[in-house]
Amino acid sequence: MPDIARPGRGATANRPSTRFNLPGREEDGDWLDAREAVDGVEPPLRTTVTIERPKTIIARNNSPDIPFDRSINAYRGCEHGCIYCFARPTHAFHDLSPGLDFETRLFAKPDAPALLRAELGKRGYVARPIAMGTNTDPYQPIEADWRITRDCIAILAETRHPLTITTKSNRILRDLDLLAEMAGHSLVAAAISIPTIDPAIARTLEPRAPHPARRLAAIRALSEAGIPTYVSVSPVIPAITDHELEHILEAAAEHGARAAFFLPIRLPHEVAPLFKAWLDAHYPDRAAKVMATIRDIRDGRENDPAFFTRMRGSGPWANLIRTRFSIACRKYGLNRERILLRNDLFRPPQGPQLSLL
Image (cartoon, rainbow, N blue to C red; front, side, top):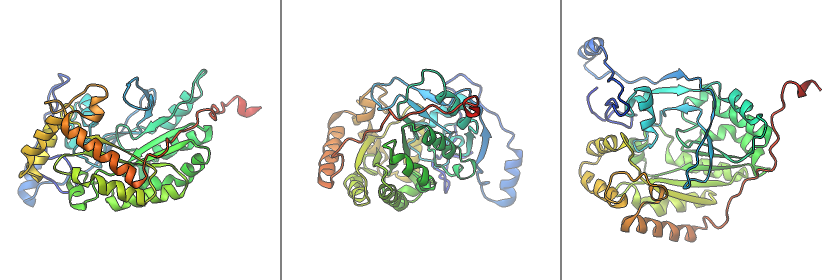
């Protein structure tokens, strides 16, 4: 595939990854060449979904700089196509490209609800908030057909298990009935990701994510339903979106957000060359400035994987963003209280033997 900007797709390239010493994929391009010759255009990319059957669904971590120790990802890959997504390199584990493959060759885990029920029912299980949306978006477009996220939430609601959700989609409102019920018991909090409220930037930065105005409307609907809602201004991209920081926080507060957080852009592994290709395609006038500032935030590198600094950045640019963020949060009444979820209401799912009694 030529390296070009395609409407509705984030990455401009689809270079195979060799990081795991897997052979590069070879494709018979004769039929593509013939189609291009006949039609005179590049064939459109279609999204495909492959069933994945993991043995467990709750992923655990011991990272000291994130506020959860377990998460669920119903899907692998994400059709939203956000060029900055730090999860893109996970597709390399399947010998697929973190570029366009990550956006178009998706994996769904239909066994997730059954696996979740089994894991929650294990003897000795101790409830702590489960995070959804930590790797790929639980409300990307294919959720409308697969409904894996909803089925998992239904089990968490049944067992009164705490849950946090991060998404950049107003499709979360389809599960408002379950989430509102859980919020009544202090069991759920939601974070809506809005890195930009400029539609022109959003069209190429996150091409298949819902319009920023719809995400703001989702914040209002969630808040009115009693669900504690954050706005995630993530990532902050210098010279592209950083000027919007205060505007996003103000708009989110006006729509009912109670809290906020931000993350400077991260460019791990294959994300860095993909992001630079995106800059060259869409912002060639400032590409060098953007990368120079990112290196300043990341201690001279394009990515800093160290705990704590990977989430905060370092240096004068990172300090300036943090200061602006803190001032804006105080001005708009965000982060005035800590949102806490209850762990003490958990009741293990009823097993088949107990249901007969």
